[in-house]
Image (cartoon, rainbow, N blue to C red; front, side, top):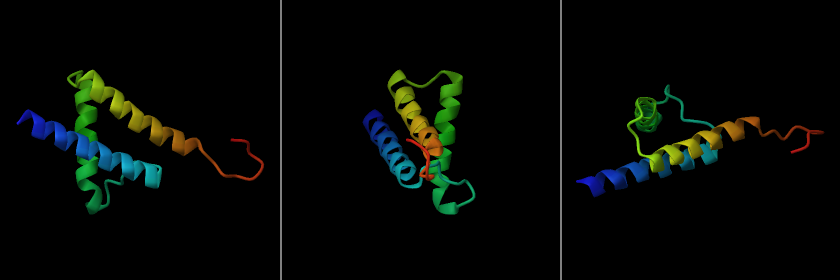
Amino acid sequence: MGLARERNWKSKYEELKAYILEHKHLPSKKKQENKNLVNWWKYNRKLVNRGTISQERLELLRDLAAMRETSLWETDQPGEEQ
């Protein structure tokens, strides 16, 4: 059962990562098709806040958060250096 949970976690992680890479932000909780990803993200944030998540998963979630935050600051405005 532990291996199945690990595969499921990694699958959801990869799905959310792909979403962030494509859309440059977390999925909207207002869209029904995003509900599972939003709930997965919220649940894992809760585990982080409780301190009950593994260090490996914590680092992976931080990577996702950094991808999102970085993408928010990137601009393609004329005259701005990147």
